[in-house]
Length: 134
Length: 102
Image 1 (spheres, rainbow over the protein chains, first blue to last red):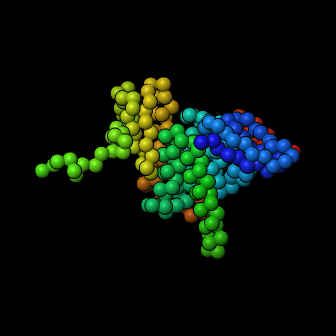
Image 2 (image 1 turned 90 degrees about the horizontal axis):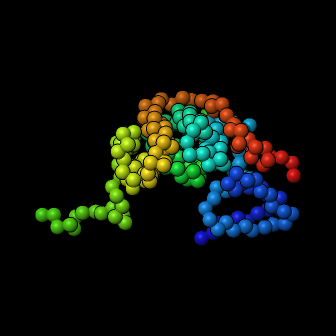
Image 3 (image 1 turned 60 degrees about the vertical axis):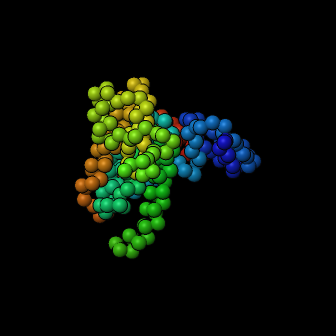
């Protein structure tokens, strides 16, 4: 089943290392096979990786964009995940981070990035409460 | 008496999964059979498909095992700063292209 991408005018996305931009009208693309696709709104710039969760997302995102099977990008991602783990209490709260690592180990880069995105969303949801405590 | 009614078979007759540390040892020794499933925890399983992927897979499995061990013992730190970000040169070209003015 193809992946359907509904694109806004001028919206950018990356497909297997190519940066593609939609034209001046809304558009729809169908990807007929599996590929590493990431929309502009899901691409984090390095200066935006200002929390442990976003740093982990950025590291995993780089692996996904490049399609790296192992190497320095994976090392960086594991270090970022380890840093994220220390922000969480011991026990079940750390399981989602291990799920990201497990997906990376399995070579499931989309799953790793998807799980990491949820971590960022959870972290952002908790941010107001943390700010209230501080 | 066991008559089979109390036996739960793995879904789709999949091969049983090997624990992570056992798989790492077998892979290092070159004794992991292709087709073996490796249990990564978190409901993730990866199948070893053969020697062509052994090096990359071993590196990823060892990294995951280190993180699992770290996760079990690392104390929580309040207000930890994010680690420094390293930008891969290939990724930088993509990120710059995405961020460039239209």
